[in-house]
Image (tube, rainbow, N blue to C red; front, side):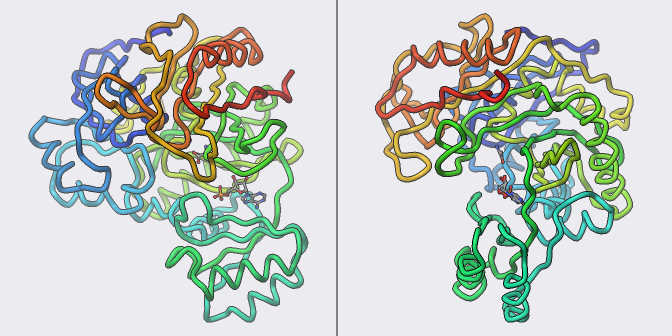
Length: 436
Ligand code: AMP
Ligand code: GLY
């Protein structure tokens, strides 16, 4: 696939944290930057090893990360997943006096993802369109039961804290909602994460994702995508981390994106500035499109997975140049441009996922990312085992392709997936089906 180059040659050493498909896509993009001298990935995967040097440090081992940054003259630390952000890696690095630049929000600002109650209050303060809600704890549990009993159906219950993507329940009956509410608050189903519960209105629309980079004052929208979350074709079955993505999305046209920018992105960034929340990173707007009107379902303080696997290939602008612009105050002037065509990614998962599945199966038919003219194989849950690459997670790898249409891109990805195999491999054949 096409490589992008920036005009100026200010080169930097970069450490990227994480080990999934999102990180392979970020590493792939960063490694192409004319600003990038040496890229390291901690801990990375066999895919990221094609883009830089993997180092064996865990994503929440802040002390080792700091020491590595000092010893290897790292200029930019890019944080892929939310966990280190919510645990305060930004603040840790700042407190050490480290001179480099962290791409990620402060611990306080990461609460936009880390606490549903925090993000709902933030949206309310800044008049950002979202579902009506109330929050409850053990203290007002009885009140919560009454709130549920008179709530319209379906009703949405959300554990306040991070619950590995399982903390949201959509109930179709009051009885079910009351049972879930009790499980969360009284039986602490998600531990501390569900000691507070947000109860909100069900938004009926089409879910989409929008991505921006911000330094808490300025921002640039860097892409958007539609994710296919259900395991089964026709959007059936259990929720997953994401089975595929497409971009650009036909109905996310200029009119819709203008609304997203004016009603959601701008008030969010202005809200961060007004409240002096330190934010230097990606912001992921999880949106519901209701008859052409965007509402926020959630904020994430990171990129999406597998959204990154289509957003990065489509983005023409040099990503490291954008990180530098965030740091030196020129982000508002940056020029965002996109590569031509449509992009789709189709995820291959382990048999049984998102339930129980086995690991360590050999993967046949893998080739280097540079092999295909219009496609890239991004590694997600893979591991090097001697000479062999084996499965190491539920979502194993994803094939992103560029095409003249979404259909062409999806068809190319499926063709490549036919050449790759591992025991129990499954992928959805209908990514982008509604745009045919
Ligand atoms: P969250 O963890 O907030 O992203 O929620 C997980 C998923 O639940 C979302 O991706 C949506 O598909 C769904 N969801 C969350 N909140 C709502 C809502 N208010 N109305 C409809 N669906 C929702
Ligand atoms: N694909 C959705 C997410 O990354 O949260």
